[in-house]
Image (cartoon, rainbow, N blue to C red; front, side, top):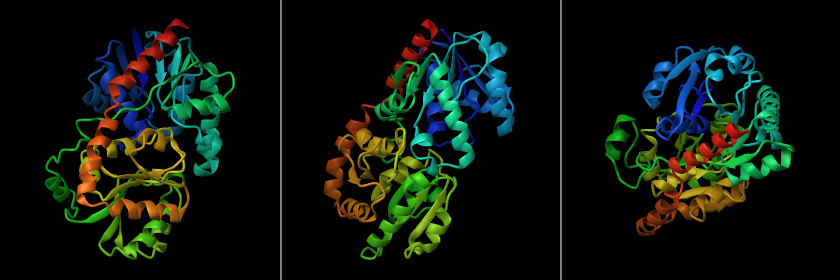
Length: 369
């Protein structure tokens, strides 16, 4: 089978959806299909280094022209005409062309909570998701939770294949791989006691609630810091930090490369991921793979992914989150060591190889259609 994977929307700094695209691009070429990656012009070398698959740089670099080109030109390109399946891994698909498309739907918060996103993106992605749901040959949902919302919000949608994300079990492991050296090179204090947040800084991540909860916890724990790892998105995160009573103990690390993340997760007192809603919540799984103590939101897909191995707080509830942070930070070394193997074994249930197998099912479904 010949598959074209559209990697043109992946930015230089990888976040959750971008990490997903990189992981499947790495593995698809070794899993059976004859894969071609379709990138932005001038971005070919980056993708060749990651994947080893053939790369064709077709897509313009500017956002507006890229979106227009994807909708109206990519589907009739020579690459699209020469494959059996086109895979749009980030909600969208070409509007012209006869090649069957598979589209990945990460989450549906553009519909359920539009206030968490920039207005222009809400309008664009609502249209794009509706179009993909109605016109794709198959959809990939990254979790059971996303699949349930597709059924609820997109009547008459294409067939859905659920393909949960995996975790790189080699990179994210229990083993200290020169973590002290990693910290030194990154300019981080190796003996710091810190709560770690990982994610793009945007309203749905619950970072404002985390900072308020940390303010409460920090009063009785003068050694504790809050480290925020993630690139700027949008919203008032800088202002929330400035208003915090404990602002001198809040450290914004900015975007952190994946090579540093495992060490950060292993050494954290806990990894706090208090998001209101996600499609999957990859940092939760990665932290568990490192044997870390995780605090996340009850009643969300992150609770499902954690499978009973995380401390839970009610989304948006400062007092509940503060209590969970206290419980996590009060675990002694013995309790942490006892939790780590079970957390790791749970994370090992999620592999990118299993995810790829479900992707291949979606491709087969689309090709037959």
